[in-house]
Length: 348
Image 1 (spheres, rainbow, N blue to C red):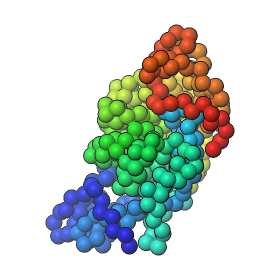
Image 2: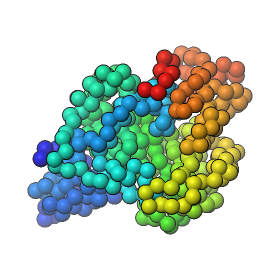
Image 3: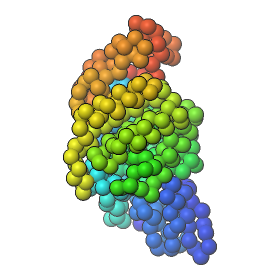
Image 4: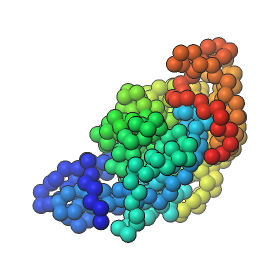
């Protein structure tokens, strides 16, 4: 077994350790693992047993994350390992998230991952598929190497990290964050013990540190789709993050053990209209494959600025003025991180 000591933990009495990677803050006895199954107490030290044991590596469009205001039309080498610190009953990657890393699985060094991204012609790295938090030490090191090679680094995450973990990742140049909204305080059918405000605390920290955040609300039928929950999500978004941060409202489909029917389109559109009416400037509806609901419009003059189809940019009409992207009709500044990769017109 390759022993990679975690960077975030503290010793307690009797050889017990506390993991400080995510907000579960698991108290782990010698010989045992935390909830995510990736961190083990080995002789009184926290070892990242899942380090580098990757379950998937694939080039994918940034729009599929979804990130719509970050390096438009780029591709990221997307990688994952095993396990999760949440166990959502509707998980769409349960074959990975409900598994655990095993000692016999081979380790791919972060240097090799970055070189693979360069060889494939990708623009960055994306930690995704399962929850990247459980692969924290590996993501951290891969990101440090990636930025030195001219690649960006981003995460698709439930955002349930400690502030120190977020701080270290931001300092390692993880500047793109697609953060899932699992629900709200009044949700009871699933994830009732989770403090849903944590993601807003962390999102604000990332924004204040110069990073880019987009929130993704999977609206699960008869679970987190009631009016009070929708209102709480919109209020938290505006109060903590502001109107410029994009909000994606995505359609749920039955997966894993959750058999509720798909989210009604009408409910998604009602939530979108409410968010826009309350002041969120960029609201998208995903998993319905409607270009009108996935395209970017100027919040002031309503001109279409970025058209998307099948997770690719098919029209990019913004004008670059200095370091800003502006609407060509009214000159309103549109928040876009990174460059538009004009030549990538096909699925990579």
